[in-house]
Image (cartoon, rainbow, N blue to C red; front, top):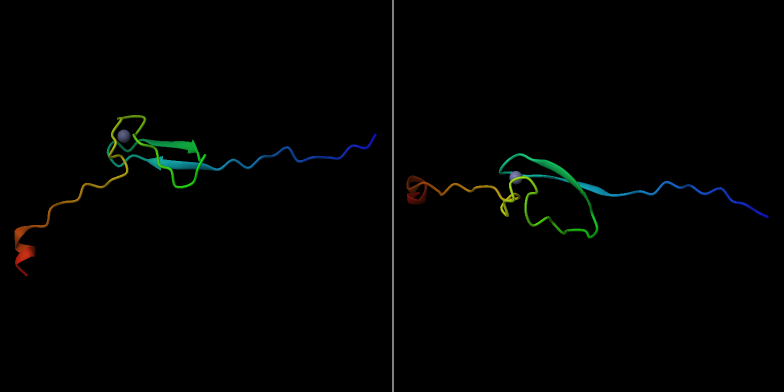
Length: 63
Ligand SMILES: [Zn+2]
């Protein structure tokens, strides 16, 4: 009987996400690339990965 040594280590890709709303940091196994969580698991905000963009002031628009 011939045995062969295997390396049981499996590389698991874990992506970390940070909620821009509440600052919650969590990690998730990346099943598919480029698939983002829909909501933050902490505050349930669907806009967790979006920055609040300030409206340009009227003074800047005049230029
Ligand atoms: Zn959050």
